Amino acid sequence: MMAMAGSLSCQQVALISLLLAAAVSRSNAFLPSSLSRGTFTQSPANIVGGPKGSSPVRPMTTNLRMGLDLVTYLRTEWISAALCTNQTPRSADVCLQLGTEDGRAVTFIPKTIRTLITSSAEPDGKLTVTARRQLKQQADRRKAATIQYEDQRADDLTEVADESVDIVISLQAAERMRDNGLDWKKSVQEAARVLKPGGRLLFTEATTIDGVNYLDYIQNLYTMRVGEDDVVKSEGDDDDENDIRYPVFDEIGSDTVDLVIVPHVAGVAIKAMDAGLTPAERAAKAAQEEKDRLADLSIAAFERGNKKRRKKKKKKKTDEEAVENA
Picture (tube, rainbow, N blue to C red):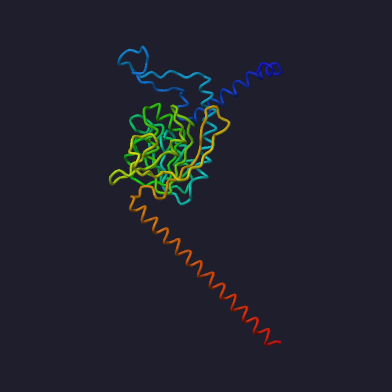
C-alpha cells in the first residue's frame, strides 16, 4: 500500500479511500443484520465478572473480523444462489428456509416454487420486523412464491407437517442458531422430518460448528423404529445396538467453498424414498420391487423371442423366394 501511495498523488489516495469506504458501507446495507451490525449476543450468565441480573452485552467485533465476515459472506452468497437455482427440481412446489433473516431466499429459489415457508433463528422463534419487510419487498418485486410467514424456531418446526415440503434450504444459519441458543442439529432433524421422500436439503454452512463436522452429521443421520413411530437420530445417540437403522439421506453431494477465509461446505442431500416406512412396509416394497423386476425380465425375454422368431421367419421367406427365382 505504501509503494502504491508513492506513485499516486495525495488527492488520488484520498479519493480511493473514500470510494472503498463507500463500497463497504453500501455492501453492508445488503448484509443480514447479524453481519452488518458486527455484534454477537452474550448472555449475562456467561459474562465473567458481570453484575448479577445485568442486561445482555453486545461487544463490537474488530474491523478485521468484520472484513473477514464480509469476504466469506459474499462468496458463500454467490454459491448459495447457484445452489438453490441449479438443485431445485422444477416439480418442487414448497420450500422451507431454516433461520430466515432477510429476503435473499426469495431471489435465490426458482420461480417454479409456489410457497416459501419461513422459520427463525431467534430465541423466541419470531421473525424480525426487518426480515418481514425484506421478504415482502422481494416478493412484491419478483412476483413469484407466496410467503408463508411462520413464527417458529428453526429447530422446532411446529407449524409444518411431516413430509409436506419439497425443498429445505439452510444458508449460513447453523452458526446463528448456535449463537442464539438454538440447536442446529435439531434443525437438521426437523428438516428431515418435514421433507417428502425424495425431497432435498440444500445447505451452505460452516464446515465445523463447535467441533462437529456439518457434513458428517448429515451423513450419519438415520431413522430408527421406536414403537409405531420413526425417530430421527444421529450416530452417538443413546440407543439399542440391535435396533434397525435406516439412513435418512441416501444420496449426498457436496464440495468445499473455496476462496473464503472461514471454511464452508455447500451441498445437497436427498431424502431416502423409503424413509419413514415401517419394517412391514419396507418388506412389502422390496417384494413389489422384486416382482416388478421379474416381470420386466419376463417381458424382455418375450420381446427377444419375438424378435428372433420374426428374423427367422424373414430369412425363411427370403430363402424360398431365392429358390423360386432360381
